[in-house]
Image (cartoon, rainbow, N blue to C red; front, top):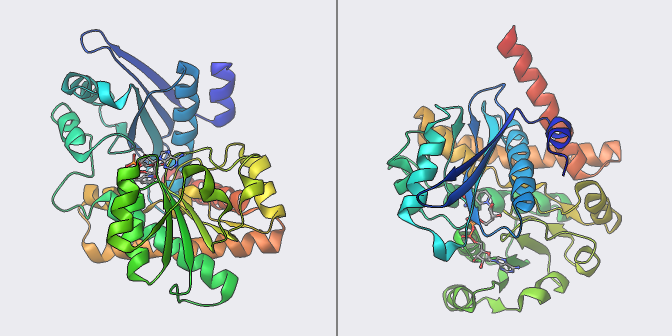
Length: 349
Ligand code: NAD
């Protein structure tokens, strides 16, 4: 990867690398855009195969955070942190070192919990820095709010496709039963949805079967199920030239970040198959909405009002895409860019 060329093309402001000698902690923080405020973005811990993979991930995720904030009308910038490690090698010393890294940015980056970090881990990071959100008593919990946001996205998609607000006839396939996937299964079950689930952990899948009567399928079978909605709630890059031809669900609506492996190519491929794709950074903004409102001390009513906007924003994106003959991915990007430039004009005027 040509680092400076890539950063210039993607529009990043700053990328920071940190290695803590004592704990051997290796981390990257990318600040994509702080034009509207501090860059917000949760931190992911992942055993990246190469440092280039980690860099690519943090650059894409931080850029997605800028668009996520814009589509959710949250006046913050986009950032992201990644810690390069196997989850079983995670130590308190590493988390403390990461906390000091975040603190050294003096509030330009505010972080929270993402894949492979528990709320206990985030509390350990918080001992070293005040720039951590999503762990206070006021917070509804970013995971819960993300799952409710995905549920709203499924409702908006169903409304557009079948002109109904009812979900009780639906079959939904959920990929990934971690924090968000499990919570989403709870809400879908409450709405009478028939669930099909997969996770790399058989134990997690068995738990959802036990709780909600879900049918367990093997991880590689989830794509080709005859269901109404496919909900990716595991990792990114799962919509690609190999998986898209298998997908039979007419709607894709899930929490995972960076679902499209190659944004342009894969979004067009989905459109050519008449699959309605909910852009990830729009549908999964619930966690950001929650932590932002925690940070500024909003009440619950305001937080839920903003959360409900996910439904309207997605409908707006679907309609724009249809009217302009573009993909929902492109429509979301245009909407985000419009909102950012409008907000920056207000800030500078
Ligand atoms: P998590 O680590 O708790 O859960 C991910 C789950 O996916 C794990 O159970 C893992 O075993 C499973 N998994 C991984 N690869 C899989 C595969 N190929 N097939 C089936 N299962 C697989 O993570 P999470 O917090 O639930 O987040 C899930 C996704 O949602 C991530 O992409 C995350 O970035 C995104 N997201 C999370 C939040 C949040 O509040 N946690 C907010 C916005 C977006």
